[in-house]
Image (cartoon, rainbow, N blue to C red; front, side):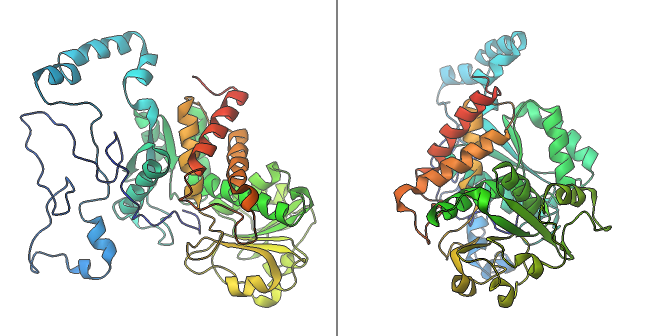
Length: 442
């Protein structure tokens, strides 16, 4: 995941619906099946042990342990199974009629199963939040959190899948074989540069949306905030020069996306300085970025690049010296998105910048990709899109920026993730763009 993170995973339950919900109201099961023990809080998962001797010694460290015990999600039914007639329709023999019809006309699976309405949240656990390569098992709390954010914010069902492989070929093959069970694939917390190849190969191979949120969700929200910041200060994006600190998944994607949106120029910096075609130490991905960016021909350090820059975008961590921030252009924008410590502290940024944004929820203008991915997938699934195109992502950014509307202010260039207008606006915009791009199938 990029330097800015999704919302804290302790979101409200979304109620009883099919798929990845918070707690739901219990699922209908075969009448002969044993029912799971209820937790004291009503969750259908395993009961919590009683007494201090049975308690997990880690549970006293933080209240998050209590919330996570037994997991954060469940599957619930959308049809009743209360009697013999219900059972005969939901399962055998009635289900055989539907299976036979789908076998004869495979496209009917999209109408008579949940396939086209559910997203797989796929990780290998190699780049989890700020924790790094912690493996698939340890990544599952984050993937569950991602799944319930899909449900909470856009009503999209999602299933977390943590794969026990870091081999690129194996990961691509595994996801491709699982794909017939899903309407879309959300790649999550997969390390760079492998994430670029994995997404590219899956997009080429599959006829459903494949979206690496760490790249594109972050880019969409960044562009939305940048559009509004430019509007607030009476400028066009084409007149801006941006500097991105971080050349990983998020930084590379933001650079490409801003160029596609028409920004004047953008320079990307890694820990060794500005990516330029004159550097001999660049990876193939970084060399491609260097060839696309830095029209000004800058070289040297991040501090050198910031002199006269209109925009700072931080997705790397570390600390930018105040002296470097002071050299930025008048009415500049600082988007310092590293968590928990922004690259430029807001108190310092406000001394020099007209608009300041972070990845934190305790400051105004939180650039958080939960503003993007639920609505983007909801729009793609609504029309059974075969891909998520650049036009669809641009449409999402424009719709997100438009939610702010007349309320636009220096401390409000991006809406809150809890603004109920966000997901519907993105859903409609993305669905419309999918039709315009010819990737919609309904």
